[in-house]
Image 1: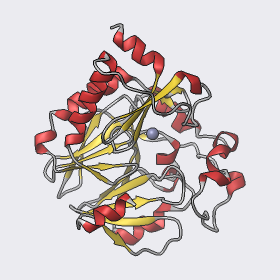
Image 2: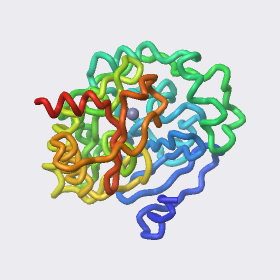
Image 3: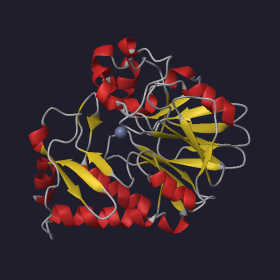
Image 4: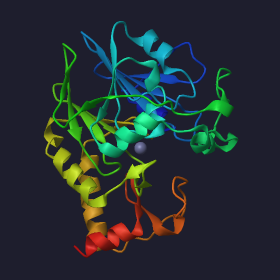
Length: 304
Ligand SMILES: [Zn+2]
C-alpha cells in the first residue's frame, strides 16, 4: 500500500487510536491524517494542530464518528474547514460547532439541504466497503444532515496562534474547492483538487457541483506560484503526501491534453459512478495522476 511506502521514508507514522473505523497517521509539522481505508472513497481528513485552536480539514464520510478520534489527538477547540461540499468530506460536520465552507451558492445550498437517505444509499451499498462498517453504523438511515456553515472567502487566514492557514480558492473539481496554505511550514492541503490519482473534473449537477477544466488549470497556475515555498502537498485521497512538482506536471499534462499536442489514449470509460452519462466522460492517465473529464469540455477548450 502506498502509505506503507511513505512510512518507510519516515514521513508518516501510524498512531494507535481507539476506533474500529478510522486509521490515524502522524505527519510532519503537527498534522494528523484521519483516514477511512475500509470504504471505496478512502477519504483522508486532516487535523492541523494549533496553539489556540486546531483545524480539522473535512469531517469524512459519517460512517464512523470522527469526533472522539479528534478528541484523542488534540485538546481544546477544534474548528472545521471543508475543502469542498462533497459528501465524503462533510458528513460529520454536524458534530462540530464551528464549520467553514467557501462562499459559493451551490455548495451552500447543498450544505443547507443535506443529502437524503435515497441520495446516499448507493454510497453505502455492500460493494462500496473494503471491510466491515462499525457496529454503530446505521446503513438504513445514512444521510448527510443539513447544516448552516460559516462562510470564508479567498485569502481568509485562520490564525491558530503558532501557525496560520490561508484559504486559497481553487475552483475546478467543484466551484467551492479550496486549499489551505501553511506558508511557514511549507505545506499545502490540496483537498480533492490535487493528488496522485484520478482527479475528477467531470461533475455537472447540483448534487456534485460543476467542474470546470479551464478554471481548474487556472487554479493550478495560481498555486504553481507557491511552489518554491512548498515542502509537500497533503492530499485528501490516495497517497497522503505528494511532491510540489506534481503541480507543474498537472499543468503541463492538461495543457498538452487540451491543445492536443500529443495523442492521449482514453484509458477507461464509464468508471465513475457519480454521473449517469458515462459515455460523455473520459479518463486520461499521466505519469503520477489521471484526470476524469467530460469530453465536451476538452472540445470546447480546444475551440477557445
Ligand atoms: Zn470531491
